[in-house]
Length: 252
Image (cartoon, rainbow, N blue to C red):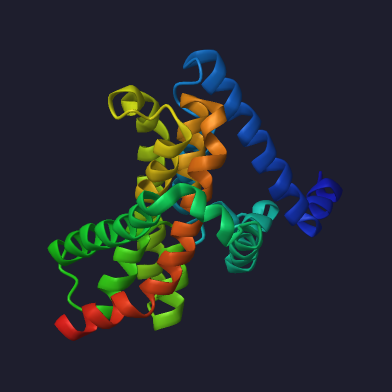
């Protein structure tokens, strides 16, 4: 057992990938068997991850969830800023501006409207919870845009780790709500064609949430919604640490 533990600790990043893989496999199995695909596997996987993080914190008394357990230390690297930023860059490289034109003016408007509305709602919630510092309000509001925009904005304007964590949490809640809610409201909002999927992706924005929600609604719509959602993330990262921060800073 000592030898096995030593091997696992030394290769904890591989353990992290294996654990995440098993978690995703179980999540998709549960989604298909018990919800008939109405709740996407990604939503279940994220929920399990949040539960595991809570359990890890309570068990170890640490601050990094399950990453404070030596064998699972690779989770900290896998979920850290390096791979997160790599994912952002790789996503951006897969987008062509010419493709956005296919969404038309409605797609463009939906992207900016989605960013601004999400930011304003997030800022209002931050203020209601007693935050008065412009950096904190902006970071939490950016998290409401997506859980990628939140930490990118927070690090750019010098937010604390605690506030950045809150921004990620806000984005995760939004992502889960979009994942689970999309199939339930799709037929009521006319989400049954590529054009509406593009507008939906621009308004809801969270790429993982939109992709999972559309996959549970109609897999053929996923590329269209994911395309505008990807642009949304880029626009959010640009505006969050510049124009939107300056506006909040001028008010607070």
